Each structure stands twice: as structure tokens, then as C-alpha cells.
Image (cartoon, rainbow, N blue to C red; front, side, top):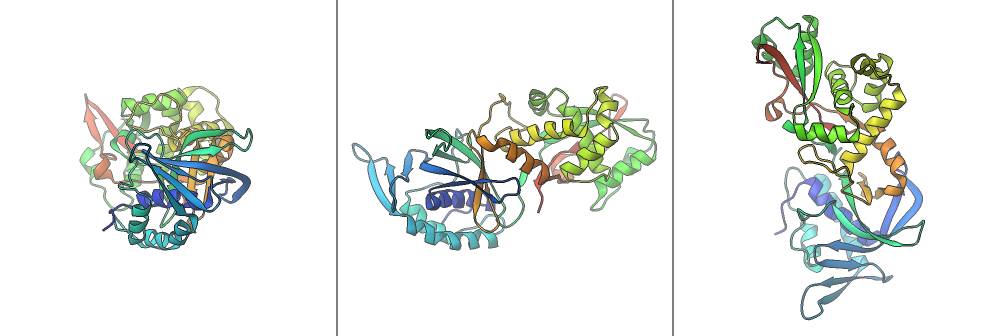
Length: 358
């Protein structure tokens, strides 16, 4: 019996196998088409096991055992032949599920647990040859997979709620909170605005997330809050559309007094997206450094994969900006979109979740 994992976790194992099979990573263009640059992977590291890809026809696995460790040779073809079956199982799976194709491979590759260790910075650690310098570097990559659907970039949580003061609200909180249905968040925002309520953004409710955002840019909490308000006001969901709307109506300038054009806002959102992609979490204090110091691996729906290396970080930023959107998460699970009163003043929290477009 194999492990029961979700699509994302199985996709990380698939990406690991694909690297072993391809012996490297192809750089991506901003539209996820393969670029010209190929990053040769010399080794893949999983805990105390080292998978060397130096030989042309076999993987050399060095694992603990004996005085100097054990060495096992695994034909590349064995790994390559397993990929279509595993891809089909991940595509068809739902929730947490077993992937029978993986069971024998895990035994052959001497893998007992597929989940990354807690102290690992990214999703996969490799030694990659830099095509610019010819030097080998040990780096870590984050992995996102489109197998079976579009992944999230920033997962919703209570930590991603933003607080808005409801200025001028004199109605019934229970009436607003009683609005229900699939579009209830937007309907509640619209009902408040129709009653003359002004939404004043106070920033992220979680101090850790607010501090992380300010580390990227001191005005980023206000910028994110304004984009979020426009999303829940029906102005669009894609990052590119929301930025155009905010810039056109000078919404950030009105709030901060600082002139921002579309390119200014686009740059700031790209910095946010890149840092989220490469290791900034809303609920963990962030030091400003990239956790995945190698870059970002994308597993495409067809099972092929490409990467954005740190060398082509500009392409990663453009890809993330053009291919992400805001999404409404569960209001009950993440405790938002409810009018509440504190010290005589009404407030409402709105939640930030960012997903890749389909």
C-alpha cells in the first residue's frame, strides 16, 4: 500500500521523478513555453540520500548503510517508464489518494516518506550547473503543479484577512450578515456601499503578515487592501485588471497622497507574488530572503515541466502577474465578510487568496 497524498504532494514526487528522467530543467518563458536555456541537474538531494545524474545511462543512489554507505544503480528508463502511469493517477485522483505506480518506485529509490522535511526551505533540493558560469550550486526550488487543476499561489487563512473600518454605517449588522448565497461577500459589500458606507482600509489583521508585507514595501498593506476591496466590489479578479482599475482611478494616490501609475503598482505586486512564490508565508515571520533560492518549477497539465531560475526572475514576475487572480475562500472557515462592532465602531474583514488562472 502506498501513501495517501493530495494532488500537490503527488505532483512534487512526479516533479522529482521528471528531473531524474530529464537530468535537468528547461527554463520557461512567461507563457510557460520552454525557453532555450537548459539547467543540467548534477544531483538531487532527499534527506540523507543523494541521487547522482552524472552517468549517461543510470542514476547512482548513495544512501546510509555500512561503513561508507550503500550505492545503488537505477536505470533512467525505469523512471521514465513510470511517468505516464503516475501522471494519469494524479490527474484522476481527488482528495487524498493512493498512487499505485509510485509504490514500487519508492522502494527502488529507497524513499520511505514523500513529504519534505520541516527544515527544508523549498520543495526539492538539487545541485544544478549554472549555464552562465559553469559552476555547480546546491539550491532549492518551489514546485507548483497544474495536473488536475489550477493551483493556489497564496492560500487563504485567517492570517490573510484585511480589516476595513465601515465609516458612516448606521444600518443593521444582522441584516448585512443575513445576506447569503454564492456571491454573498460581494452582495454584502454592495449593500454597505449602497447605504453610503465608506470602507477605510486598516491593513492586514495579522501582525506577522502585515510586517512581512511592509518588508517588501511600506505601502503594500494599503495597496493589497485596495485591490482586495475592488475585487469584492466586482471590478475584476485578475491581478492585471485590478491594477489597471486602481491606477486609472488613482485609488492609492487618494489614500496615501503618493502618486502611483500602473507600472508602479505592477512592479509592487510582482515583488509580492515573487516573494510568496519563493517562500514568504503570511503566518511566519519572514527575514526578507528567498526560501527557494533556486527558483520555481511549474508542472504543466501535460506532464512536462519548466522552471523559472533565479537568473530569469523577471520572467517569473511577469508570469505570476499575468496568470494569477483573486479568489473568494470560505467565509466560515476563515472568519471574514461579517459586520462586527468594536468600541462603538463597525468593521468588516475581507480575505486574500490568490490562485493561478485556469
